[in-house]
Amino acid sequence: SQKIEQNSEALNIQEGKTATLTCNYTNYSPAYLQWYRQDPGRGPVFLLLIRENEKEKRKERLKVTFDTTLKQSLFHITASQPADSATYLCALRALTGGGNKLTFGTGTQLKVEL
Amino acid sequence: ETGVTQTPRHLVMGMTNKKSLKCEQHLGHNAMYWYKQSAKKPLELMFVYSLEERVENNSVPSRFSPECPNSSHLFLHLHTLQPEDSALYLCASSTGLADNEQFFGPGTRLTVL
Image (cartoon, rainbow over all chains, first blue to last red; front, side):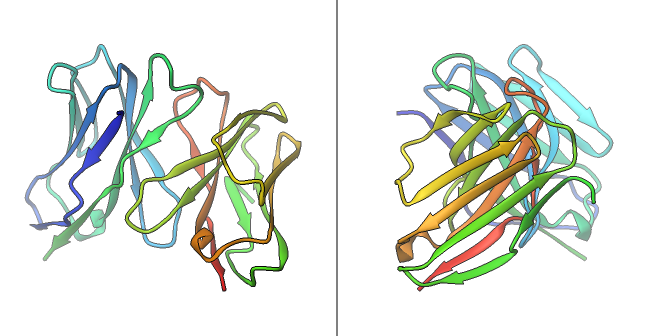
């Protein structure tokens, strides 16, 4: 069956360190993968998109990698700050068979401590 | 107002009530979506509308009834809900169906007693 898996345990890191979040998928041929940020009581906010033929994408302190052999995307936040504390969701759109849908992972909560 | 707005932000209803959730987008988008988000579960896509036509219905129970009167407004009509329907209901929009980025509203926190 198709699955998108993110680490359900919260990730706690110190301010200034690099946070790395993982998104693994099985039984998908992805067209692209997206990362969203969600704060408590709010809707998700789009951060980055990476296509299946791209290895890496950057935006300011954010970096996403995509390894279609490992079926994995990594999301990095460098020089992390307490304001980066949130839940981060990955979402995947399949090349075929997915219809019009983005399929989301459960998200990983990131806590950046002083 | 800008972006995607949803009303009400919180709703408590009994199992025999009928209520409606409203979503409005001010972005000029052509596609709109309803998602359900329950604790510890991924977002579940419920309905997709493109140019006011429903293009996807992901096996959602008939006690949830969507309506899209125009490309800026989306409703979710609720009746005879169950306690397990308690969740955060999120509306989103995008430029088109194949487009990359979805813009989400703040959600309606629904509690069914």
